[in-house]
Length: 340
Image (cartoon, rainbow, N blue to C red):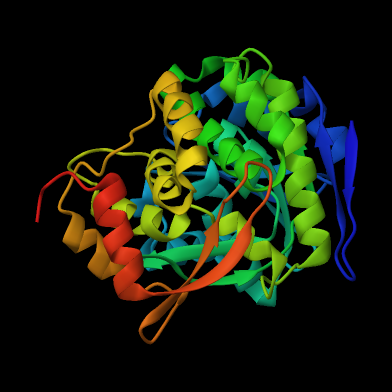
């Protein structure tokens, strides 16, 4: 299946196909120098499968985790591109999850003011969400994705077969992003979760999620309006994620927590059992006030107010501005754990 992301400039194909990784040489332009960026959590068989189809591959493996989205790792990638004599006619390929995609894409846009970038996501989270959309970034201090750019890939290959090596927790982590999109945009997709069928029908979940994000992107590439719905659950989620090192929470797990306070009571009553069935957290397992303080520096805050996505009915959304104090009070009630 090919989904075409139609943009005013730099539109591209999203190829959703089992076994696509084995046809990377046909589907991508790899007859040149190729920097393959991956992390040490990605099975080497996937990396080598892609490298074998490149004319001149260079593989760089970074440590897994958000810590790799840093200036020092970005510098190392750009230095490798320069030392390997990459030119504007060469390319970067991300083989991994969201961290690898963000980092590799930012290296691609930074080097020589932009070289071709392809994304081959290997996690559920990156397949349903982060591999498309053109957001590339690194973190600074405790602030996630604060340094970055919009840079669209030339093509995205999504192969559900590569998910077979993932443990259940990683699958649930990615499904949290699909669940997010179902709440704001697709009641039928939410019903799939509610009936406990999401993991068994992962291909269908990926396709419906991609169609939602594709539609949003085509209306609002640069996040001036509709694209803000993709941030549902992320404001608090990023605050939790910045402090969760000792608790080891994944991105999707933090987003799961962040969705709960921004739903009407009747929606929350249906959401909580779904989160629990997936093994996703429903309370903040750390100092709540510290997470809320980080949120105060989020780019969605303006003075004493914050922009939020609110779900009153499953499958629909509202964009609201709330006083920051009111938002914090709501968080404390919905997902607080008594820690201060």
